[in-house]
Length: 495
Image 1: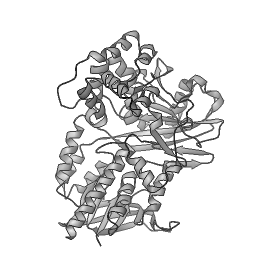
Image 2 (image 1 turned 180 degrees about the horizontal axis):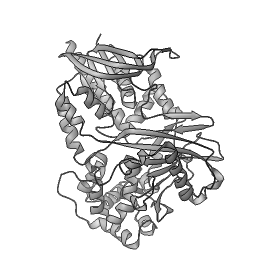
Image 3 (image 1 turned 180 degrees about the vertical axis):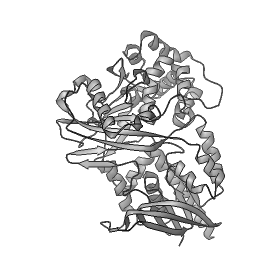
Image 4 (image 1 turned 90 degrees about the vertical axis):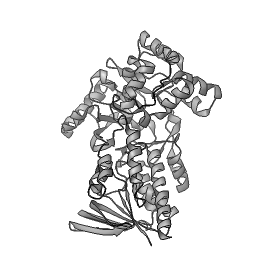
């Protein structure tokens, strides 16, 4: 029976194990993670009466892999769509909160009447957006930054007032270095196929595709294309783990990886103060205290479902070229403050799903999400749960501040942008150090070179959000493909 080690029990590691269970039921799979719980950066905190998402709070269904997995798990009824009230996104201009134009999706204007009447842009800025229709397509196939693309097609004001804050809020990245090919290839394809963003929107409108209808009706985002678990994203991660029939070792960090021969891998690691080891087919996990120590094991295949920087460290001795390529993917850190605010203190015109903040505003937050306005069951009716995002590649220096200082920043942002006067009823802060990979210009070429090099090792798989998409559906897709490649490689190896 071939033995497979999966290092990392976040969404990518869990999904790889879940699909391996279906594709290679004859294999013995073991998961290792240094954390004390599964899920990686997808965590839910339950502090009665609050359900707080510390990381991602939903996933998109436009890329179908996540919803397909949910349906395969038979838990579709456990997922809910966003609320219909306050289904708008807003942006800050001159210290005031203003609705993003209806149908402005990432960087594509799909409702021109909304663009021509928005208060976010000046008259000159609106006219420049309308002139995008006449901007010639770019002939070069070389990668360019989001900033370059947006200014070229929509003008600088639209970039600075709309595109940059929206992109910064999603990717926690600097638009001047973020790769169009890696982050938003659909708009490059639209430019090449239709000649531009407005032309692409008009072409979709003519076809009356359901996706285009949704894009025209939504404000700032296609909210009907998102889902979230009723009980929180952390519940979903644990539900995936409970479906597994493999062994999971938590609080164990793999520190060394070595190739024993052409078809065997050995790993070593450190056990932390508590070891949690259980067979997840059982109704309840068993936990046993353990003294700090070391562990090792030999496996026929390895899946590195961890940040590329950690994968680089583990492969440095045996795969120096692959390690060097992995080290070229930078990461950004962020912090999220969660505040429970009295609903009565927030003016109705500021009730929305979220607010993004342009760099031009020189504020200390990247974005503010009114998470309880998006999904039911997050807090009592007289309270609004607000998440304030800080740091990222845009403001990395903020992460040097203390937790108390960051919470004070969050209170100030909520006070000034939402009009709140009293202190929060409850608050918490979570830090995510080096958690968000940065898709720099040239990322797609780097990933192509990286996986060409990795293809020499059929029993070594790399998966995660550092490569082909930071979203949950993209991570699930890549994890499934890793499971497919490994199942095929082990079958061929056995023959």
